[in-house]
Image (tube, rainbow, N blue to C red):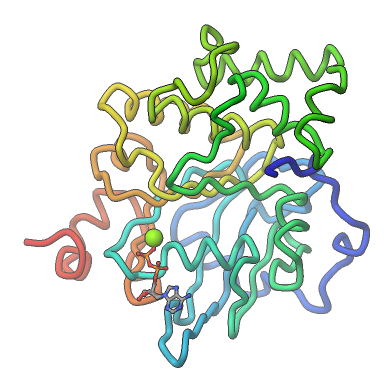
Length: 291
Ligand SMILES: Nc1ncnc2c1ncn2[C@@H]1O[C@H](COP(=O)(O)OP(=O)(O)O)[C@@H](O)[C@H]1O
Ligand SMILES: [Mg+2]
């Protein structure tokens, strides 16, 4: 079941941490040109940063999949993460969503939520949504019903579908259907959609929970050119209202959406900046882009 309640921050998580995790973080953010942005809801983001990873390490039997990783995402930012296979991109998303615990380091959502101290469910409820590469929609249900279920908190599929929708809930589903351009297919069975449309539906299901930070792992893999183009438009529309972290190998796609690009290599940040800047970086060419 995918449905999780709308973000409601537990009072315990609203407490200030014992020390200020940003005491020396400003220079890193300034270095990559992130200014103050509009504030997220309910979440304390007074420094304009929605996600802070500091000195994160993850070891698997002594092998460091992440190695003193430092990364800052601004509120409303659309960040692309690139890097060779095995660089640690998926492991980083696993740390952010609580699937993997770091062996060292700090991970903050906003100013006060310590992600290393929260369960996967708490993290999802706090407003971090993740989309895996393979779409996982309910194929036997209609597009509309999939969105309806994503909105509900009840664990039982059939109980959720039997419960009556309020007009606000229905309006929200219609709005998301428009955003993902599936209004004409609202009553189609999800299993009959194209691969790309299933991806859009799954993004729509994430949007039903109104996450403040969206993590998307290789979203355009297997999409047609037209679907890839629409995904770029969609992400640009979502940025600002949401913060997005997108892992993608398709450089054309990255070039069409990225504010800032972070290059991961051997579990650390190798380079950060505009796509042009990182593409011109000799170390990035060496390990990732090729000569
Ligand atoms: N559960 C695990 N156990 C052991 N090694 C792992 C595990 N998960 C990932 N790794 C290793 O960590 C490294 C980073 O993997 P991953 O985060 O999947 O990289 P990417 O997504 O950038 O391709 C790889 O060398 C991978 O083999
Ligand atoms: Mg990966």
